[in-house]
Length: 357
Image (cartoon, rainbow, N blue to C red; front, side, top):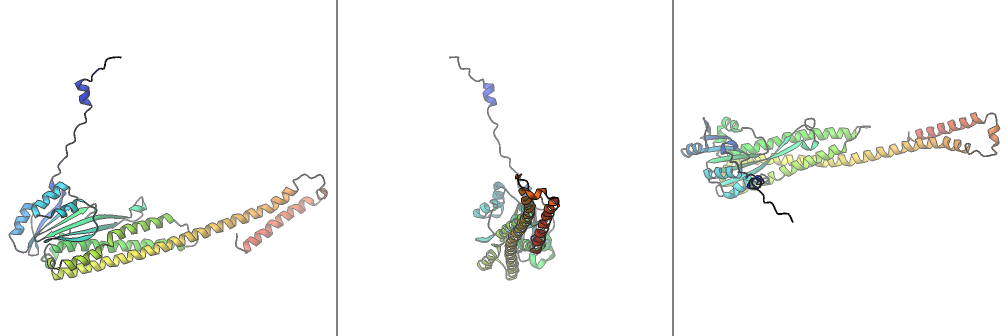
């Protein structure tokens, strides 16, 4: 038995995998902006969070608005240390797959809204990408509002608060309304685009002698189903939130939120109507395709029948019987050929009369 040769230190060292050290991402990379509002007006300047909080605490009617994009667990923990955010909210913020809802934690409100964006079917390679969804989370407290976006663009909406001092003076909850109102208004735009697309599909289905793409109808049904999952829970969540958190929202702001709730309900009803129309289009498409197939089969059967008659006649005279007296007749060939043509002509006339051809 040959002796075992031990591995050298060098070779054994090379077999080790280098350890991966997690890279800490600075908090500033996840911050879109940090702004301060005092008495309904934005305070000019760029602030870090500690500085912004200090300015807000020096005034009675002031709050800080911080916008974040996809913060990590570590970044959100640091944010919570500044604003004393409840740990349950921090856990939900990092998990970006929340159902639309409004939850209360003492003096803090946590709101989740799903954003929906539409892209024209000519702009996407796959029809399944017509509707894209994201998630926007809003945390409000006595002197702060934090908006967090996951997988969805969100424009800087501070200009709306700046242009409407009566709105900004309502406090941090006004930020929740501005963001939710923008998202729900975008629902209405998406619903208008979908209405146009469904109308075009109806024209395709009910236009005579036009090819039908059933897969396209299925894709739109799937996209609308995805949108309904994002939108349908919002109206009930707003209704419960307004009922259970009246003390955290001023009266004027509650009326604004009820308008958002009404718009969300309108969009949900429209999407339900689109889904029913697409189901009817599917049934009509299947029926139209079935009728087209039946028509094609009748046409094929008619052509086969027309070819069968002369084939049968030719087959009889091709059997090479020993005694076929008509073969010796001078006019047998033109007579048989005429019979073939006449038979085919009569069959063609009958098929045309009964609309088989």
